[in-house]
Image 1 (tube, helix red, strand yellow):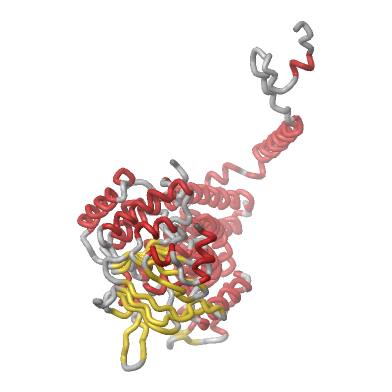
Image 2: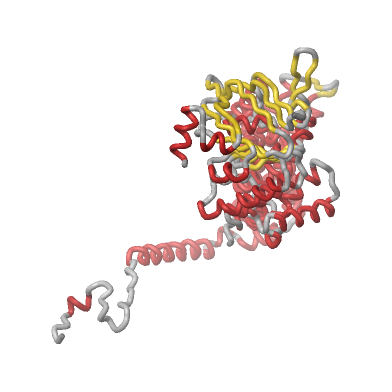
Length: 254
Length: 284
């Protein structure tokens, strides 16, 4: 097996006295889709946020594409990187939020163009052309001049995905991308994500959509109480779970 | 079928109605009585002002655009602009300090706001005016020569303004959803870019209304510098009426100018608010 694209090793994270991650290990190979399932409070969103250093780990380490995230190793110590270097790492990791977090005062096009122009120093004209192409890809070519509030939740999330893609990231992280959507809008967002999966984009998706996991995931990871309880192919984990906790969770959501 | 009684017709939504019943709004006698009373009182007040010879509107007209008054107005305007600009610049730094992760910066910013909001502006102006008693010389120069009345006015008003501006800016920043900063961080935007492009424009929506209030307050508040003999609008008309004893007409000169400038600023505020409100209306 070649070196994993994402390598998470015994990661611990606490918020005050509450230990949210209690030693998580996870490997994701390039081109694979990993779906993380688990009850709320199991630490899956926190795990995702440590992968682009939105949360700092207390112990352990994470590497993406062969480089430590957020730290530099010297001897037996990990030194936190300067912000500039962390920001540069983040441009290679796309992140899609549960609540979209589009910039409400910028148009759809400006939302997408912002990062390529200011973080990657792309010429604005080139970035604008690329942005129009991405909007076309998520089916919103006609919404370039709209403001986020003028769009439905599903449309906003598709813009957010286009915005993450604009940096041409090596890895995409989705944090419950459909949880804030009305039921009838979930499908259009999942379709876009599936499309990306079929094109071989490496991604980690935290979600409650079991059907999506079954259809798209190469690996399903089940987390509970800050630990990875079990992982494997969708067939193994979803249809023949080995752990009681996985069975209990699936019996509630299926 | 012939027993089509009145009560039956009056029933709500009677399917036998030829037309739906007409809707008659409730009469609001109390409101109209109050409105009439207010109009009468307003008429009496206007009448008494217009017919009171002691207002001497002719004198008001004579001095309204006199050189001394316009010079005073000019000083009031640039002093207001300068104090607002410096006050908000310092206030923004203080707000950043208050929101910093560093406890020393947080503590010092909090202490500044606490101190300068506690001190009456008049006391502060007199304090700076007499600072020579504490430090007779500054940088090898006599303090009295270094800090003239206008400089003292700028320093005092700015320090006072900054304490309030800090709270206004801090409130504005707090009104911006945390997810906005996270999204900007996740996209790799630099700290500077996150502040100028993402946080500040959104914070401005909450900052502009109270800042407009402060601007108008400062415009009129600068009149306090007349106590240390800075020749602002108020002090300029005072100089005239100390000579001519036409106190009321000259106070009216100053008042009308304050009203005019305030009105212009209010119109400006409307457009600034509209600018920063873009993208916030739910037009679908």
